Amino acid sequence: MQHRTRDDDVRDVPDGLSAGTVRKVREALEGRRRGAALLLPLAGPAVIVSVAYMDPGNFATNIQAGARYGYALLWVVLLANGVAMLFQALSAKLGIVTGRNLAELCRERLPAPLVWCMWIVSEIAAMATDLAEFLGGAIGLALLFHLPLIAGMAVTALVTYGLLFFERAGFRPLELVIGALVGLIGLCYLLELFIVPVAWTGVLRGTFTARLPDAQAVMIAVGIVGATVMPHALFLHSGLTQARVQPRNDAERARLLRFSNVEVVIALAFAGLINMAMVIMASASFHQGHADVAEIGTAWHTLAPLFGVAAAGIFLASLIASGISSSVVGTLAGQMIMQGFVGFQIPLWLRRLVTMAPSFAVVGLGVNATDALVASQVVLSLALPFPMAALVVFTCRRDIMGAYANRAWVAWLAVLGALTVLALNALLLVQALGVSVPGLG
Image 1 (cartoon, helix red, strand yellow):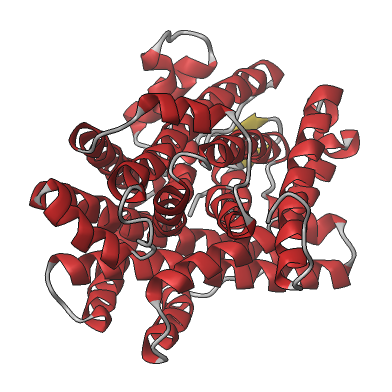
Image 2 (cartoon, rainbow, N blue to C red):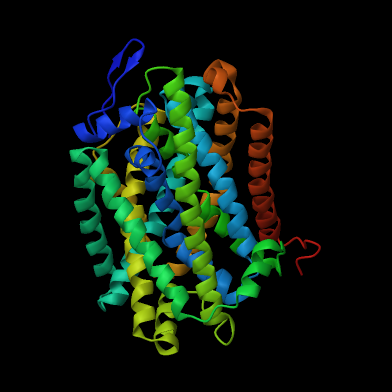
């Protein structure tokens, strides 16, 4: 996806950027630009990664969270988004400082058996990711145009293939297309909040009061974490930054890291607000009188008579934009994971074909699509500790990061975030084994 050139200590900006953007990037790194004009030429990696935080898996888990528990699980969304910001910033830093992505460093630094295990787990997570993304776009198209689900899947596949052609023109055109789709999702949910009646005091209480109302809330909470902190996004971000903008000296590298952190905060704060808006919309629409709404299709059919065709149409537009954009990003991430772990790639069209297969299998077997979406997010949450642990270890090691190794407080926050995810996973497994957990009813 990126073209790298090296000349000893001098690093050039890759040719995925236009000449004008290259000039603006150099001015930003040299301190000759200020404000938004400074950030815009460097923006891109976090915007692409943010798509992973508002994909159709988020729709499925957030609809269930809002419909069943009102605003009570908003704190889980906030917590997951905070963890996501920290780990995406670490991933971006790893790529900028080392010139390697996370998967490559795993292959270079870890024992071979562990590398193969991580690759297999990562590929399973990539397929679970693609299941959510591909099914989400297909469901949206099928509902909007009254198509069979299999036809919606075929259209989603064709559109995804079309967008992947933008990658041939360099990464900047693809970044702009993905950024436009992200903006569309945000606009849709902003409009939804003006349509549905929101109890803002309940929103504040749910956001800042941590509680799990019952045992079923544990699975949904784990699904929210799995849909928010994504394994493939941790691998992808380091790959997007490893050669996109190449600093010439330590001063430029330090400045680039600051810009990267700002972009991560802005892009993921936007994604987090969209996730919270999903829960708020589902709570305001369904919690009173329609708490059994647990499927995307049911949500769409229920929205229309409650709040009009516009509310339902906006919901589907955001779902389609989410499914298509996240499917493209997921394909690119899968390619990067394979290249990093095993050292070779397959054509993007072939990877797209392989990762679509589970989605067609799910539909062919008659599995409920929304249930499959939620289950896929739980799979992602169970796969998440592997890249999280590797990222914490690598970014703490001075022999890898040099002067940019994590400070003590950052390392402790990262460990705490990883342990939080592990704790939620452990609760889910204990619940699945039928063991009663005090306080969960």
